[in-house]
Image 1 (cartoon, one colour):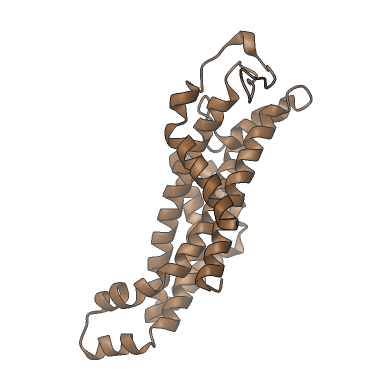
Image 2 (image 1 turned 60 degrees about the horizontal axis):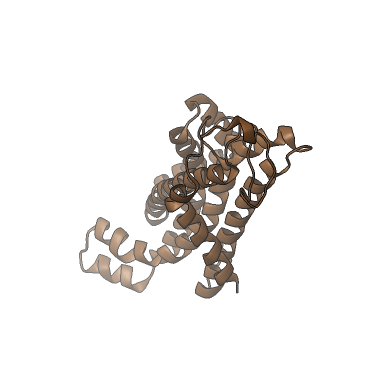
Length: 263
């Protein structure tokens, strides 16, 4: 049941981000006659303070959330996994340096560090990816490091060393393939975290800028009209909740199905 719910929500999100604009039109089209119009049969999600379709802007926000989350998770997982793999396999001074860097990053609240980086880099999707990736890689690095420390003493690794295999071959052919399952589970939970972080930064004005839509910025703009048009904040909030819930359910299912312990 969890898998069905997760896949359904994530599939709807993916299809909406890729093809939704073909059905709902331009998200920035302004119609002054429809300002703050409530949801109706003609417009199930209503219109915002500029007469723009809330449905079309939700689709635009879904595209931004998909783009930022996929790129950020990929960059964070790739960088963190390689750093953790090298640190855990070699140990010694390399591991000590990497561990201290991870401790320093973890000493700061993640969202505050992302806010500071986004403020320095300036608003925009590129800044969002860099800011969130700079915080998110440590989780993958810790997991990869722990896995590498466990796997480096396995018999097949010892045999590969005895046969004269190069260190690159050992790392990327004999160690890394055995780490992908827990890293995949971590990435599914990371997807939910990135979506929340992107919405939070956009809510603060540090993410996607007007007139482009983001679920976080839609909530910020809609919060001014909660008493007269609550649908402006309710629908993007529900969209965030649905996608984050689906990503977490998928992560829970993968963890239980693959019998992975989270570190």
